[in-house]
Image 1: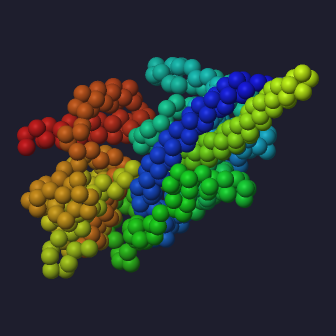
Image 2 (image 1 turned 180 degrees about the horizontal axis):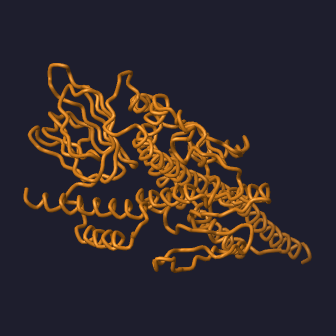
Image 3 (image 1 turned 180 degrees about the vertical axis):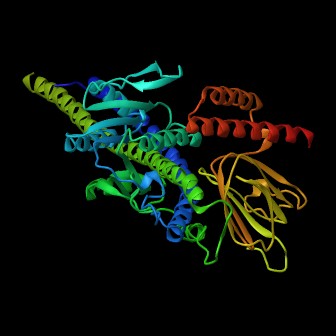
Length: 357
Length: 154
């Protein structure tokens, strides 16, 4: 049986751990608040792009009547043979099952599409590390074409699933221009028919109690402005309750901030009931706006995923703090019992020693 | 929204990160893809794509964000490299993929970008796509440099 000293030492160690997890929880709460603000600030832009595209699709024929061609290559659907999968995970651990859940969903997607060739684009360090261990990285070689120019040519595949790119550090300070580059590369790969579809796996985050893991189709565009959800995992009621408790103790609002007014404002963009003068032909406007739409979907998914990561870490650290407190309580109880037992034993010894005299 | 009698347009400049500015102005200069244009109160409804260039807001006042609350006669200038604008009689909304104040521009980087663009232009050959891309990079860099040097003159 452990003696009082050992128990006291253990209690001290658990107390230290509790201190750390508590601090991490508060840090995550602060980061979550900032991430939420950023997600909120990014909303008008995304909303405006969507509404102007919606209004343009209503006014412009998607199909050219004389030739029957679709006016923009991003609308063209092809049989899905090669698929791009963008996985947005976290950069750091200690966030409960956050990264594990995202990777699980990604693996499910991959095993559900075994007949297809899948390219993975990993955003976030945790996901990248995992995929790197599991799948070969695509190899690009510089080759000379007929005119003597160097071009990047992809070597033959080493497997059905390959990692085509990673974006280290993209999530730490979400630089719009880097997301822009990424969107640009995805669009051009689609236009060049290197991929037939693009999906994105990320954690959607409206508020602490309203979040889910989704697989969303990015390309081809079937209908602008509608989320094309291919699969979603809702958290269990228990998980939601835990998250809500953690948020309350850290002073985070449960419901998403009310933005209806700003949303309504943004929705009006480009949709006023008047005849607009188009400075450029509508098709050109379209060609400029669509990649921007892809960008805004990507950017949106990343801002939400960052918020979700911090929320998950906050919840996990809150649980850890609670567990540590419980442990301290039970250890203290145990320690007191042991001490009491020792005292009782000593008294009995004295008393029985006195009786023997 | 501007009062009909005030002859002011309500200007909003929105970037992916946030709404950068929302204020009343007497006029706005916009770098449309096909050339600069100036919008005053009562302009006909218009949708246009913006190229690389400066958005200039003349006589900005009543700014919503306190940081930008400057005098009524001040001009606000932002360098934009791609954007989209909706003009309504009393309101101008600019969606810009990136908006920088002239003093925020890193001239050295812009010059490097210009160099890179010119190399791309030389390497483009017959490929129309590469050519367009190179031109875009060059235009962006030139607009940045012009905007930054304009800032020094002021």
